Length: 247
Image (tube, rainbow, N blue to C red; front, side, top):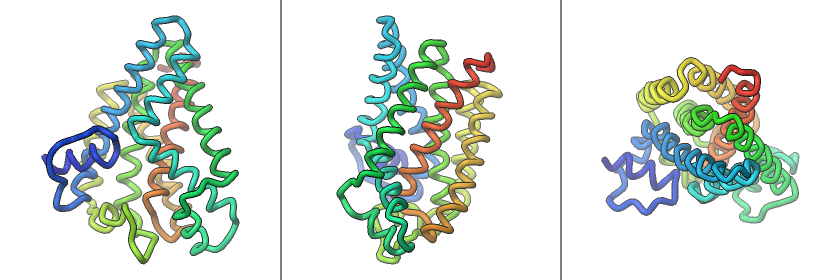
């Protein structure tokens, strides 16, 4: 199961023994399953912490777990992308800014906004005991990464950490990931789970158009940013529909 090992090592900080897959892209179909794992750990932390009655604190803890288990990889990607856009330069300059290890003011503001929204949404879902709805965005956001990796070229001519995933990605990787995502979302939350999956795929399609126009393709940072945008966005929407009584 080398592709699964590669997926776990790529998306989490879990110390997984064994060798990576010969083709890194073969890990892509397992991304939704890793989303289940990450989401389950976050929801477990949210549930256990909420037993104390301090719902806001439970949301904070769950948010911290979501950042910790992923090494902050996606949040870092979001900050790099927002910094690049904030510079308002040409495409090549945006790509250069994303490689800069320093975080600018735009990136800091993006991180703060992202984590605040995520914390509030998780807290609200905990208050309503909507554990399944809290799980779905973590599945969908990892599935969206597969959509982008299989449908866009790699944006950097010189390559990068995510280049092998993108350049070796094939349509059947996406098909397998979508089948897995549908099964997981349906099992977790029924028709509402499928609604959130559909919404996430629509956002991924719009992000694909945007990335093609502004960056000429996708990079690791852009994949990470898409994960955060969709994950936090769907958590917020899930909190809204739960309040409206559709959860």
